[in-house]
Length: 526
Ligand SMILES: CCCCCCCCCCCCC/C=C/[C@@H](O)[C@H](COP(=O)(O)O)NC(=O)CCCCC
Ligand SMILES: Nc1ncnc2c1ncn2[C@@H]1O[C@H](COP(=O)(O)OP(=O)(O)O)[C@@H](O)[C@H]1O
Ligand SMILES: [Ca+2]
Image (cartoon, rainbow, N blue to C red):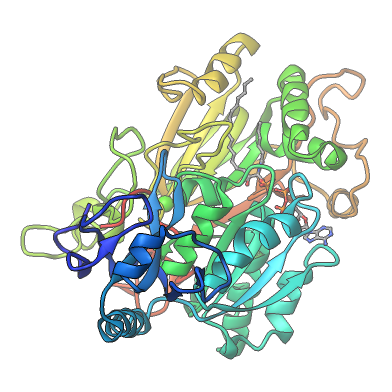
């Protein structure tokens, strides 16, 4: 269908022959054209060498032709590259069309021309290189995008290369082929580089960061692929490559995680203590199992049924549009994200400036099976609606989900609801808050020696139940699962990253997107 609001081409004077139709018109929006090339009808080849068999009669009648490759929307958010070939009588007219389309494509400034690509060969089912070579590289070539490809040799290779060596000026964007861990490496590399270049200290939780100018594209080749799935709606390498080519972009919230005023990490999807921390810690030792390690460790962790004691303090986001219990979902062109989550008064003042909206910190003590902060829905193939289905990609908040100690049966009901239409928050032992900041303090302080042991990945004997050292009840600490990376510190402070130029009031925490942009918005583009 031709979209009424988009500049597009209709080809009524041409004879379309690719599907045996004659005299039909075909509308393609310029923003969704990937490439155009002239067809050498006489020799039966296109200029990229691919064959197209033409009936003799039509080549005589219509000796000139060109082919347009464009985005075709398939099922369930999937995009495909389709070709349509147009034939006509006059060579000059044909060339005019090709030239005009090329000019229109060149004028699309949001499209990348040069990309830096990092492939994690060990992510997911270890298919990253094959996926890139077979499914993605041909599309980038078709769209005349030049690439510099680096296959990583060790963990943090991409992060360190981005932080110190990469000549970022040469590129319009960086692309990672891998899972959430690889995306996290991109974010850390780019954000750190930008702050270092601008003299900003990441260790201060209150420091305003300078936004990154480069976008990050994700080609899913990991185990959970939650960041890709939650932004695009599917974890499909071809769909992601096409979104990158057409220059789609989506801003994302980024949380910074600190411990004692020391910066630990950024998080864009899940920060999970208890269940998801324990699943990750156990699954890291079973990487050889591939993505199935999460099912194995998930089941094992469910059976152990450990709970953790501590205090959660949080600053509710009282001045925003939307709640975690909304039935609406964050999609491309989301109204809430366009306004950075901000609610305005009738005279267009941001509500958080009004006294009645100045919320205070809340404190909850207890025994928790899980403490999760979802800065986006965290939808993934295991849970298509995600940990917090109504969370927004770029509203400056994170959804804090507290699952208190309950029976195994009830916890299983809660987990299973992530995979069905039922509300996982509608349970007496679960609460969810949309927050700007939060802190967690475990009931027992972690000693430095315990932290050292955890950081070095050694098994901890001291973490077994402090009250009853001889029993097998819950350990004193879990770890944090930070976008799939383990954080050994139990006590953390988390806040939405603040971006220079987006702060509305110096004295109040008004969070904003980091300026980290991923390609690929979810659903139909506006
Ligand atoms: C008994 C039925 C249990 C069903 C539970 C379903 C709930 C699944 C929610 C999953 C949320 C995932 C949030 C994303 C986390 C990723 O960042 C992280 C790393 O991903 P990757 O780098 O691609 O490997 N993945 C995980 O922590 C896996 C969690 C799986 C839990 C079963
Ligand atoms: N060449 C490499 N060898 C080993 N580990 C790597 C390599 N490149 C990246 N990594 C690390 O692999 C981890 C998992 O990567 P990811 O792409 O998220 O896959 P998965 O989704 O399977 O966890 C990340 O922590 C990343 O830092
Ligand atoms: Ca958010």
